[in-house]
Image (cartoon, rainbow, N blue to C red):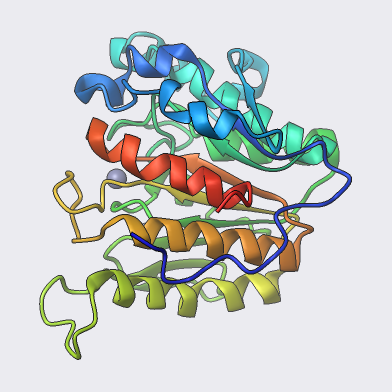
Length: 304
Ligand SMILES: [Zn+2]
Ligand SMILES: [Zn+2]
């Protein structure tokens, strides 16, 4: 199926060594919250074709440090995560998201795709759940602020569910633009915290598909805010639980996600020199992960 919105922008700065870094640890395919359904069982093999390109590079992350974790979470949360067998991959998941941000900031890669075994956006300072353990994006942000002097970040969250952990951590931080497509309808007085309701699955009218309606909503709500906000880096929190048949089904199919990949890539090229990190979120089905993720990475790398 062809994407309705071809990527038009540049696929990355010419001085970077690779267009796209892929961050993946073998444990993500074996054991984790989200591998109750073994969703990454086909990885990394499903990336074989992509990895033949010299535009992409595969990185294997180590665990996130306790020192960094304690800058985002309470000691009590760390203990509870340690005691939860479903969070076994949490350290390497957050480690990959943090490392991806560093590689972008160092200029080794223009943008990044971070796989995870355990999710992040339902993890707040002192709570976690919903397949999430440590807040990977928040850890990456704190690290980039401290090590590289980055300050402002824009987060697009298209996972089916409200990113309550991320919102909790950055509620009073005006340097974080958090636009979350979750079914709520909200905008903070300063305009940096936004929730957008899902479109109705039925009754889109005029022969338009749910993909078209939802994509138009993202295009209407996110880019103009990012252009005004001028972030140092853009995150896309990419859950595919919104796909038809998955556990957060709002009726979407492949072209929606692939079009979003183009949108965020081109937007980052326009506002922050291409600095973009895509972080995997919810979604449980192996066949969907295998079908949806490689084309997203191809678009980030300018391979399609
Ligand atoms: Zn979700
Ligand atoms: Zn939300």
